[in-house]
Image 1: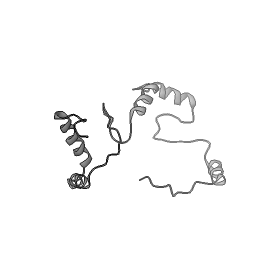
Image 2: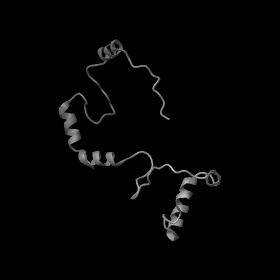
Image 3: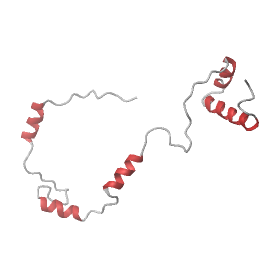
Image 4: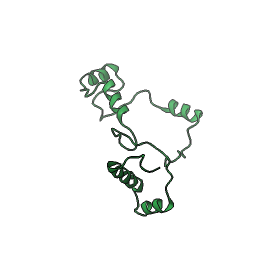
Length: 118
């Protein structure tokens, strides 16, 4: 379950004060280029190796899904009325009882026709 963000958002006044207090020039000895010099930044990133185009990255991200993996023939949601003893017997087998009902019905269909019982 997703937790709510309990951290309050900064006010407009505190953001304005933080921006006013920020230095105009940044000096970072660990940075391989001067981040204040646009030419140096461009020169540094010109040599970067791009492993995927933006379209490829977007495609890879779009393919990622949350939840169960996709299957060729997805199961359909349905409501079925079962006799109480049948339901309880399958539920008693634990997690996956609905999958076992599906397997039992699939096995039954191999030797019977759905129209046999009326």
